[in-house]
Length: 490
Picture 1: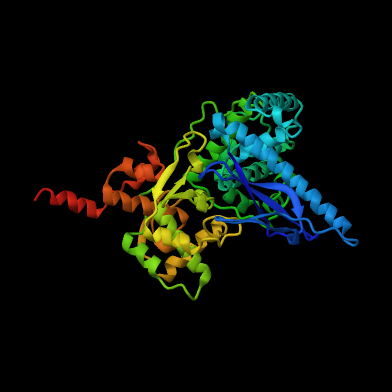
Picture 2: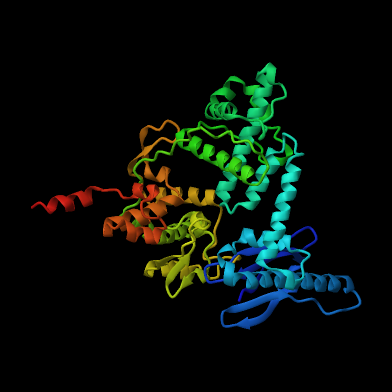
């Protein structure tokens, strides 16, 4: 049976109210949270019950008096709305969990709640959800026949709302949308024959796709030739893709980023084909290629322990980020999964979670035993995060910046050989200057492989499937292993 708990957002509106967040526990490893749309004054969000696991919070309306009638009514109304939302949420999950539990992701639940908004509780079922979803799809297909050529941005947002993508992947799609906007503006301004050019999803052909990616690869050089034009293009995006940023910096794009963007745009066109938004297939016959990566670099166990033992008591911020980084080095998960972990993911000293990257295609629960150091770090931050997560996380970008600062502070600056992402050429960089959260994952995998030399065993902890090209990069045969092999000849 699904259960509910409430948290109050720290953001307070001008009316003095905050939104109630609803955390839904479907299983020990599946605890999505939702915005309830219910706002209440913090004074009326109180402890309603004390259990062995901790305090249980809820909306507690004030006692009615002569001067607070309006506030009392508002609080009772908020409590009723929250109860209604929670009942709909638990009813939906309880009905679907037995036969369709693998579908109960946050995105699916939010969509199902919207589709069944006016349903009676007894009418909610998987079949009714699929039926109304099919009707909505047909409506979209009919609407698509009347769509204008500028609707690519709206279609892209609809695509992102339906796909269970990470924050980083969604951000990269919106970057792609801004490139499309600049490409349109550039063509209109420089080609007299195409003054009204639009990246029309129904008309763009293979040649147009190849022209777009040629522009994308060379955009920075093109912008340097037309500085005034790009100053305008970078400040006048369509309303659908304005982000609020004051400025944008165009950077050179190498092979890997171009391959990633091609795959993303092709996936978007495939989605439009499948959902009836267009019959156009401009990617047919286009070879996308594959990313190229160098040998992965990671911290040795000695370096990792040096970081773990460094005294950061004078800098609490770096101490916290160091601890999170070391914990990640000990469990090997991706940063997107790390930031969703809660104490409920730790069961009898074993961390259990479903990797977000493979949740849709192969939802396997990974089980990683926590060693003494990992358990101690988790214990240190118990109850410190207001959202109930395992650690008080900051943004991914700030976390990556902090990791670099941590390594510099510890004096870990040995040179490593990497591939320049733009030129594809090898270059030497200090490891502290290119460190990131993903290096924690590499540190976990690389050092494990050096210990056991069994890709299947390591893959069962990291989430890599047998034969994975990505995992093959981690299987570095380093000098220690080579010495062991040569010693066998003595």
